[in-house]
Each structure stands twice: as structure tokens, then as C-alpha cells.
Image (cartoon, rainbow, N blue to C red):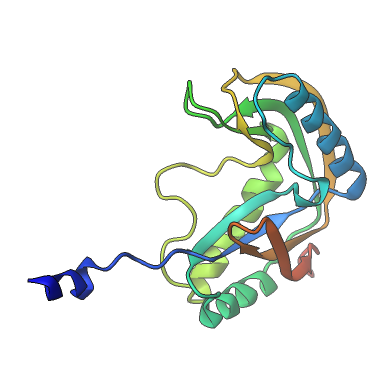
Length: 201
């Protein structure tokens, strides 16, 4: 019968419109260097891929979810409480390789990665994960399939390529931010920022 098509169980889920994540951003000078490097990489391929603008370059610390119809206030509040509890000294991050996150032979993201130079990011990622649990954020945070791999996405739609070393790009991480991503609209809005300060003795 026609009315069966409108059963709740058969309705398509709403399309996510808003994302929430923690991130760190390179300083303006480092972002400009990364952006120029991304432009050079894109120019060296035959695909129509555009590099990310310098002001959009970042490292995601934790992805907290995508939502339809706006961000849930309770999730934002819990994330804010978790972030405010973090006590960590500033640290230096270094990226010294470029790698493809594409599924060969399909195109995909081209990213900067780092080995030991990303240790501080791992520590901040773990601290935020624990703080979110204590703040009652609820649900699973990040990916349960893959481990955390700190990276800076330079461009999307790039052909697969083997990882290779590049000239080191580094900066001092002195703060982190909670970001509202307007999905499909290429906009990131910083909801709040927190300075990294060592725990008081």
C-alpha cells in the first residue's frame, strides 16, 4: 500500500549540515609556506584540483561529529568544558613528508604528515579524548576504525602518490580551537580558542 512508503523506518536520515571538531592552526607565515607548496604540487599534476586556502590549513585533533540542522548545544557545551580543563605546555610540531590519502587509483586528499615531530599533537589528542569523557560528551569521538594520524590537508582530488620526504615545515603550537564547520559551504568558524599553558606547580 502507498502509505507504507512513509513509515518512519523507511525515511532517509537528514543530511548533515554542521560539523564540530577540535583543531590547531599554523601561524600565518607557516600557512603561507604550506599554501605555496600546495599550489606547486597542484600545478605539477594534470587534474583540476585546487589547493586549500592558507586560512583553511589546519590539523584536526578530534572530530566530534556531523549534525543536521545545527550543532547540538549540549555537545558544544561539553566540548567547551573539556577544552577548558586541558593543561599542557606549548609545543613544536613538525611535518616532513607528503602523502596521499587516496584509494589507489582513485584521487583523494594530499596531506603533510610527520613522525616524531607530531608527538605533541598525539598528546593533545589523547588529553582531549579523556577530557571529553569526563565532561559527559557521550558517543564515540573520532574514528573507531583508524588510529589518529596528525596531518595537514593541502588539496583534495589529487592522484595517488607514494609518500615522500619534503623540506620540514614546523611551528609552535600555542593554542587550540573548537571549530564549527559549515558542511558544503567551505567555511570554518572558530567557536572558542584556548591557550596552552603548563600546569601550575
